[in-house]
Image (cartoon, rainbow, N blue to C red; front, side):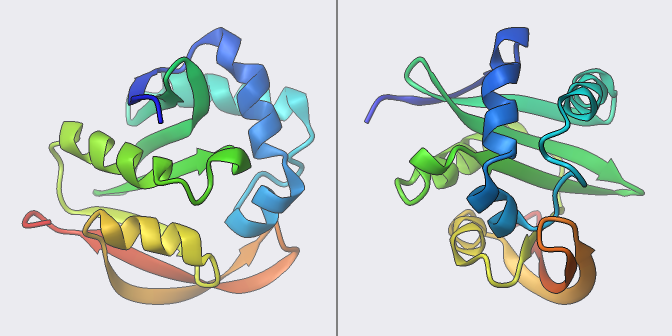
Length: 160
């Protein structure tokens, strides 16, 4: 496999990211998604906010020259949370785990919180391999599923 890297999201990435984030299988798996993943105008507005907000650190994940997904951290009150999204073609190939570890190596803040649908075994495995530990669960409305589901909350502490 080609080298996994991080770079800033570029304008020419947006079509591919839009396609990734509206893939129905990925939307169901991620669960906590945009209300209408097919709304391009809302997607573009959302990406403008992500790319310009001072408290959001958004990166493209590449495998060689190919865009594999995105990874970001953002402030929630005094906490920092992390999120990522990968094209389904990269699932199960170690890309998310490698990209998350690479990103965490650049991110000095700890602790970091992450959340995943409790039935999203792949994402939970990625987070655990990067040192995150389960700290609780919550029930919340998941737009990607159209009903409330359980969400696992994980944390990476300073020693992780």
